[in-house]
Amino acid sequence: MTSHTTPVIEELAKDYASYAKLDLSNQMKSFHDTIEDVMMRLEEFQSIIEMVQSESSQCMEQHIPRLQDMQQEVINLCRRIDALEHVIAMANVNLTTLEAAVDNAEAELGISDRLFGMLNPLSFFKKAQEPMVPSKLPAFEPPTIYRSDDYFKNE
Image (tube, rainbow, N blue to C red; front, side, top):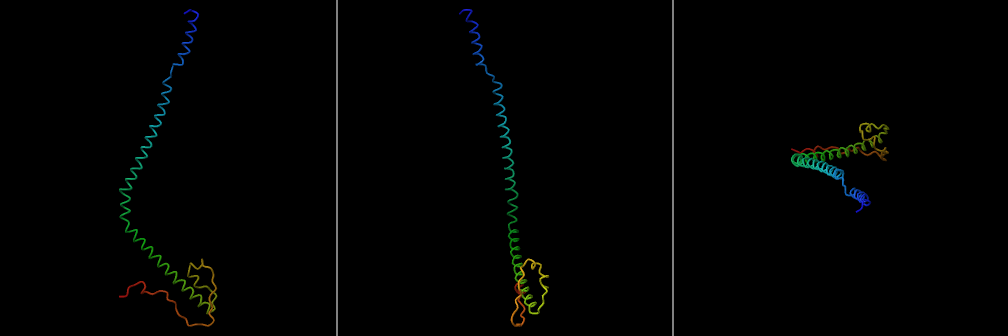
């Protein structure tokens, strides 16, 4: 080797040595940041799972037995609501029958006032109907509106 080639070889060695140099601390820092981010997300997911499990166990231990205990009360309430709906339907039928009888009586007597309509708050929502005027005056027969035998036992 000549002195002439030595500086070229040293320069070439320095150039190739820079390729071999690795900055492991910077590359490892990005790996550590990624690992820490994944660990944090896993901890958050674990805490969410624990909250869901605790809520589920609370539901199974407290709420479901309470609902099962109230089952009979709910059934009784449903029966009472059904009976109330039946009473309301009967009252509506009776009120409609009575209103028709009053309309006919007003028509027979020639009264133009709607006295009974003021007593029935639901009459405001009904469409006005023409009263039926019979050709001859039949004998008045009161409509069957309420019979106590339907609601009370005979003793």
